Image (cartoon, rainbow, N blue to C red; front, top):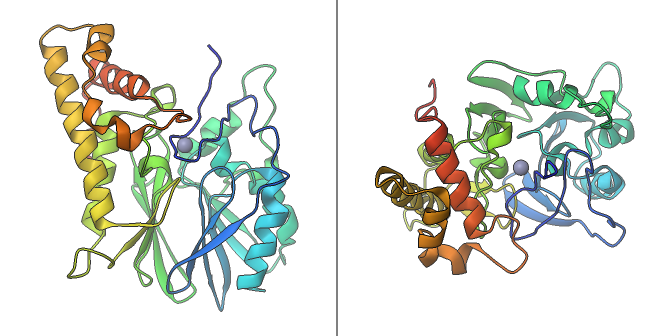
Length: 317
Ligand SMILES: [Zn+2]
């Protein structure tokens, strides 16, 4: 099987390490959705892009696919004429990092105000570990401002921006980005409302890390009194969400994990577990006809990550 690494999504975009973008992006329009304060969500093809704008310039979280860079930049320029100072990549999948180099080129940074591309060091390691015959990731798009600590802080456009590494969740290089003043969290593919999470075991993902990361989002998010509003959450794919949406998603992952774990304890094989359909009551909400992460794929990933090792369970925080 080829190394398909598509992200779970209601908006399914097939991508692989070797073939990094869908066939035709010509007709893709970028939709700009205000999130809260000076934060916007830009939806096109691939993962959602989060943009923070202000007096110091522009910070982006994730860059979709290279051919969309001019359209993304055109929309960003409607929000701010300032320099693009930061790109933060939530993880290494091509539908989140594919536009890095093209955005860097279009940004035409002033050397005095350079563009920095930030990601966890595992993202840089994976993007530079090219298999024979595989296209190299463009140098200009590499996250050379990588970090290897549990978190990294910036202060930009008048607010603290905190980047947290979430170990072994969707992949082994996931970052959450908390905009502390605006009260917005950009999650990457740890959280994909409307689609089962893609636990990319081949790239270090695990269900235990996924649950730990979702619990961390809930620790950081504070709902308003009505349970609606308060902290807003920009998911890897799908609509703008709040604390209640993350609770629902986390509960689903925990319940399916518990059911699969019970079946493993009874000695059931992966095929027997899939046949028992432990996610059945959630499938109508999380699977559509074009979902990449089918119920079987999700259950299999949960089974495999529980069988391989207990996973990190807790992060180092
Ligand atoms: Zn992904």
